Image (cartoon, rainbow, N blue to C red; front, side):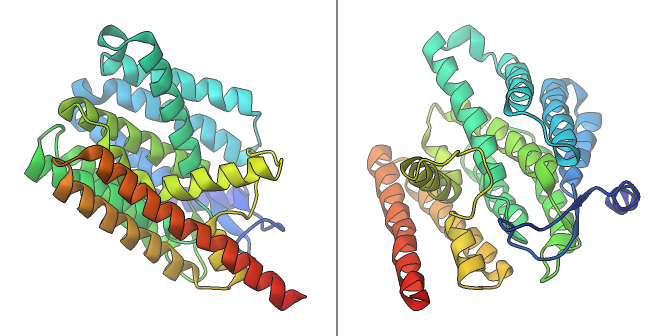
Length: 308
């Protein structure tokens, strides 16, 4: 109901996404449907005020600044400042400033900011954000229930339910709405906060592999764009999913589903073998995904040959 109400507001105030030469779509669509993730956070906050007050404050800050950016483009400095403040709140909540060395805290800031922005960059085709979010939180739910209890189950169930609601409107050939920055950055903030709780509970960084499919695509794409001497903060069409959906015209829903299944497979391997040699596990999964990603250049070369 809340999302339907938002659609009316977005339509009235012209909060829309207009396609351009870098877009994966060709029709005007309502933007900001990802506000459903903030609503899910609000429900969680009302039920578990004491445990989630700092998290919800941080979520609200990044959601507000992202919604503003959806309506009127903001400078990177303003957005990064908001992200820094929001992340500082959750770091305080998790007591990171007290027991972690200064350099580790700095690395944690870089990881947090980098991850939420990379998650935003990956939000470019119908269904990908909603499905991938379910794969991550579904894996976190399993770990919380069967491996180590580190958070109230509702905290990982609510974003899954919100994703299902969002997908009802987004996982279509012609989407009713897009997540917008408020959705992709907001849910990424929720994901990284939850992952940090799991890492602290298990004293292991292996759980970062719950984001490894996005990480491989985003990381390799950034490296490629740096090689091309492009501004990595500007919109582009270099991601693997963009090549598949834009250049090879594969249905967005099929590409999104492929990312979802591939991440579930990686998460399954992590859960099954996390107690073994974690370095070998990490390197093995990352290496395979990077090799898969590199096939993008073969596809581009093949496409270029057809156009000659």
